[in-house]
Amino acid sequence: MKEKMTYSEAIEQVMLHNGYFAPLKLLYKEVWKYKDFAEVKGKTPINTIQERVQRDERFTKIGLGIYALTDKINLLAQQAVPTTEKEKVQTKHGEMQGMLLEIGNSRKEVQETYTNDKKFVFQNKTLGSLATLQSVPPFTYDKIIKESVNYADVIWFNERYFPSKIFEVENSTDFRDAFVKFMELQDFLIEFICVSPLERKNKFDREIEKNAFRPIKERVKFYSYEQIENDYNASLIKLYI
Image (cartoon, rainbow, N blue to C red; front, side, top):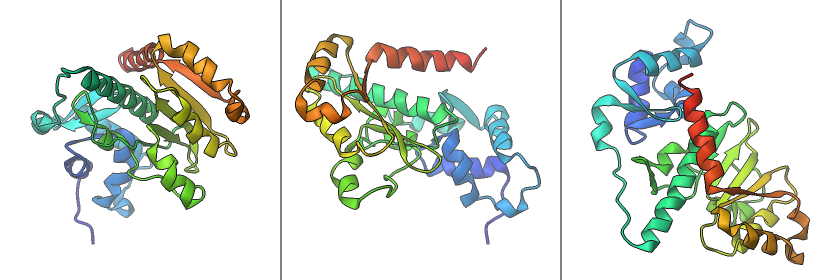
């Protein structure tokens, strides 16, 4: 038997078990671990969850559809200031992944989000806690998932738990590893996206022209860091207008 809890109490439990914060999409599905759905009287529990995190002082917005326990904000992961070039690259990589996870979590057509880099920190939020999935659903052969899909930077899943978009953040590599991952999934209706600094677009264009990648040539898109940042910031602005 589940202990009788209010919505706010159940939300609090989800956040306590997710590093003191949670995306709304995670709350929508995890709240029922602590609150008995059979006792819900209203027809719009999702709206009730939204209302609680927005109005209850126990919760504070800390991102795009992300809420934290107000009295635990000081316990969130701290993002270290990068000092070496390698650390700067890793930090930028994590920032892009964090933005992509938050954007995905905020979109109705995206059911779940996943990342392989769970320990990276974006604005004091670990990527593993930003993602709504901790493992990839078994949508295809186990070998492909274990050897390829599991290592994707960010994946958005649709309501049937199939990948709809796969993002690979490429700061300095030659894009080939990303293309090989995409090739493994060419039989699925997935949008393949490489995210990289704008000045690397010419390198991307040269590599995708190689014969080995001909089957996916027309399906792989290039997004610059600036495009992702603009999309993220525009999504934030929409919340306040």
